[in-house]
Image (cartoon, rainbow over all chains, first blue to last red):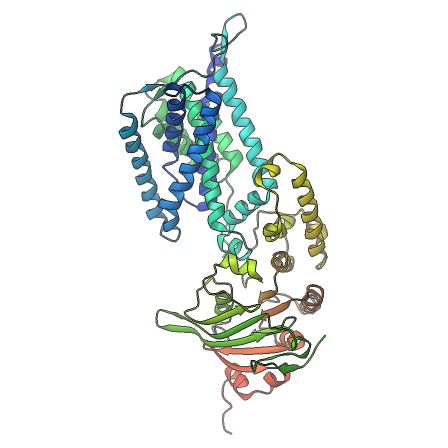
Length: 296
Length: 277
């Protein structure tokens, strides 16, 4: 039974990684940059939700919506101010800027909310229960886990439909393949990139709320480790690929939880990254990444 | 519809059927310098509303640079471009496309991972009006627009008999079909002026002949102007009404195919000076 319950926690954690990884993968696919500040947007989402519910006494639903809107705006603003001026700069400059934005967000949060951990309120308990007990109490599935997995699947479906069948989605795929040609076909590349950041950051807010509901301590550094793990998941699944983000996220979550349960809690992160290294050695483009062959 | 060139008020030559209409494109003293190199200098060209014009010249003469100036891939350092009488100064590539210039590329630049139909639809993006939410939730507005878009994409593909390939991945098409798809995608943006950069490159004589027919058909159906860069002189002399010859970034001759063929400077630019016997 513990295997099953570990598997469920793994899938639940993996779903959160997958949602975050989507943000990395979309931005990378379209703007060809690694937005290392993405993890900190998760933290901002968590704090926004925490403040409105704990200090202002809001109902969780409008609080989550506000966090999504807030992070979406934050994503657009960060892109406008920090990344857009560097559109034609070397990718290293953009990477360092992204790390700078990451530190800026963490320190701004430190200034605003202090360094002491906040306890995130439990949204997902119904009539005093935080989950349902199955098989005569041997297996306990939390509501948070159920909601996390459902939300992840819904997001995946919506995003696949969006990129596959809408004009904005097609514009995104066109920009991701050839920015120059897309521009010459009348696509507003800057607007498309802004939209990508908006969607990625909105998803980060959702991931933030889910993450804080699963692990209810909130600190200015809350987003950085899950951010790095999700980035790993994106690379693991094949960066630029939406199903890859899902697969990479889920596998990473399950591997992490199993390593914690059966090997060692301290070594679990090392094991996660070791698996990544092995996968990249065998398949450098990630599990679902596309092999790009240069024509000579 | 092959008509002789007549002079209009500005002094430029356009086909006689376009003489009473304002020209689609006027370049006045256009120039660009890269560092100290004058890649294109004092480029003047007027294209009639339904003219098929050719831009020729030896390799490195600056022909593609002219296309890049017209589409604002490079910002001109000198001169004016009037598109349908409107100054395109300060416009971005995207804005110029929306204002009515579409192009193809010397080296094919399709969205290879998208389907043929989606490539065409990307070109039609600006004309589609439904918003993101009706797209995700498949609201009635989405279906209506999608149906119209699908029909128009098929109609455009039918110019080149490519309807059957609509669901194939663009990158999987044979070379000739990819070249044709690029033209269709450019047409989908609803241009007034279509720029074709070496449309016949790599085609065999029968494919080239078919292409010539199709360029004429496009002009007649959509009533648009075409400016093409081409090294295949057979194609140029057969379908272009006005020809402009570029060498070292400067225009060395302009005129009808007959005039160009008998122009001594042009012959010299291509073949070198005749030695005195």
